[in-house]
Image (cartoon, rainbow, N blue to C red; front, side, top):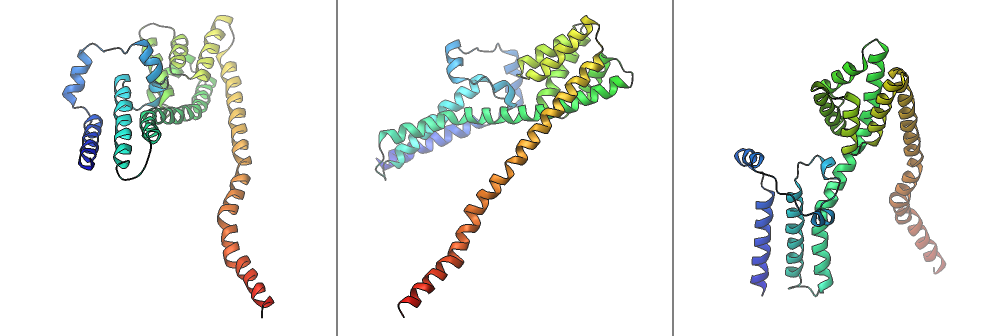
Length: 267
């Protein structure tokens, strides 16, 4: 029984190594030529998280589902192997399988949240650069094309404005394309900026005024976030004091003093 459990664990680990091995360049090129297999709608809604396109991990939907299934099986097999030595029930096995099953989803959600936070910080730089260039007399379209060529060090932002610049080179309206790309990537603030710039052209409003309005709004939002983060410092310092310094104070000062007083009472 123990040998069979060890064999199952070894097989699971080998399957993990094979599943996580990077694909060769030849296989990647062949995959580009082959038609992409689409997962059923119900499978996608249950197993695939919407943040997959924002995570930047380079995983396909099929690879995410494969990772969830493999890690779920590994968790179940390893917990069952531990059950050969320790008395654990079927709930523990199911819990380990579930933990392995949701681990890739948690990884994708964490990466997507990190890239969204990076995009929010980069959006401030994008609007400020655009406002400075337009204020110097540069046309708004060429401003965004120039920024797209350089980038603002924000993965999702760079991806959106680069795609919009390519569409603009093919004759599509720049800010309409940027609004669509931003909405597809979940960048609602960038989509709002692009929609306002597109609407300003139709209404005859200057793009510089729109950029300055969004610049002031983004600066106010960043200032509020900084103040909120600063307000949490006091609570974290108090937590460090309670967890680190007070136990040391109790062990080194209070408890020896209390024991000395007790010793003096019985002398």
